[in-house]
Every structure is written in C-alpha cells, then in structure tokens.
Amino acid sequence: MNSNEPQSPSEFWEDRYQSAEQIWSGKVNRVLEEVAGSLPPGTALDLGCGEGGDVVWLARRGWAVTGIDISPTAVERAAAAADAAGVGGRVEFVAADLTTLPAGRYDLVTASFLHAPVGVELPRIAILKQAAERVAAGGHLLVTGHAAFPPWADVPDHEYEFASPQEEIELLGLGDQWEVLAAELRPREATSPSGEQTTLEDAVILLRRRH
Ligand SMILES: C[S@@+](CC[C@H](N)C(=O)[O-])C[C@H]1O[C@@H](n2cnc3c(N)ncnc32)[C@H](O)[C@@H]1O
Image (cartoon, rainbow, N blue to C red; front, top):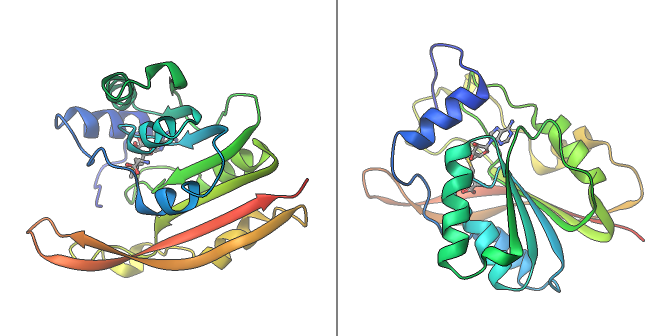
C-alpha cells in the first residue's frame, strides 16, 4: 500500500477499481459470516462495500442491506452481483463518501477492511463514530480490519500503525450504552500474490447497543 503522490480518496478508489475487471473475490468476509450467521436477519448497512461480497451474502440470508462506497464503479459491480444472485430487490447501493452517512437506524452496521493506502485520506474513527449512531437499539456494530500489513506489503512498519481492537474501541469513546462482545485478533488463511499460503490476523470489534 504505497502512494507517492497525494490523490483524493474518490480519485484513488475509482482508479483502483477501473484498473481491473474485478478487485476482490466476491465472497463474504469470514468474520462477517461468523458473526452475522448467528444473528436474525434485519436491516444492515455496509460501509465501504466494494464489489458487494458482504452485501450479497447478507441479502441472501434475508437481510435488507444498504451498501455505500466512494467508487461508482465498485457500486455498479456490487449492484450487478446482487442482481446476478437474485437479491437485487433487497439491496440498495449508494456511491458516496462515508464522511456523510444517510439517515436511519440499522440492526447491523458492518465495515470490512475499511482501510486506505498510506497517503490516501480516510477518517476511519470519525466515520465509525458516525456509523455507531446508525445502530438501532439492540443492534450490532461489527468492524473487521487488518491487524498489520501482510508480509508481502512493501510499506515499512514505521510508516503506519494499526490500532489494536481495544485501542480502537477507546478511540471510538462510545460510552456505556455499548456492550463489547468481541475485541480480538482472529487468524485467517490467505494466499499471497505469489501464491504462498499464509496466516494473517484480522482485528475484530463487535459491539452491541443496549436497549
Ligand atoms: C479495502 S476495500 C474493502 C472493500 C470491501 N469491504 C471488502 O471487504 O471487500 C475498502 C473500500 O472502502 C472504500 N472507501 C474508502 N474510503 C471511503 C470513503 N471515504 N467513503 C466511502 N468508501 C470508501 C473503497 O472504495 C473500498 O471499496
């Protein structure tokens, strides 16, 4: 994740998606599958939904899902994936910057790998604070991120530090109406760009808003 010249987030991400027909696997992220698999379907908001793998999985399980992403190309692909999966009627996609979220409350607000390369602006904590306000009483906020750069990344560690799940919860400063269900690192099997199998760690925060 390296960037020499500053680029606006919308330019960066739109260029990134236009650089290839598909960027991500199209599959649900493992942590979301594990967490939401045991929740009753309701309404969900996916922050930085990319090409829609998580949105489509949730919709297939009966959730009514809104996916937001800054890249119009990503959102188009996500909508096409939802149509192809036959769940187009249960999803809505918005091409927008997450710094302004739509009104409304959701049973689940989820963000999977809401990160940006070094040099591309992303006010992650401010976005997650706003997102927490969109969680309905009794609902969940699930944030899954990288715990560290993968071994193949060409960014020296000292250029960027990932907050631990506990540190991120403290940065969110959400108060006692929130119950912490998980703040932990979870291992995930991954394949490097050169095809080697490796184990990465995901940083996971799962919070529930008390009634
Ligand atoms: C690493 S990708 C993860 C995509 C998807 N959640 C997944 O797990 O496959 C990060 C996503 O966040 C989006 N994003 C980054 N900054 C954003 C912002 N300010 N507003 C909306 N989306 C943003 C990017 O366009 C990109 O699709």
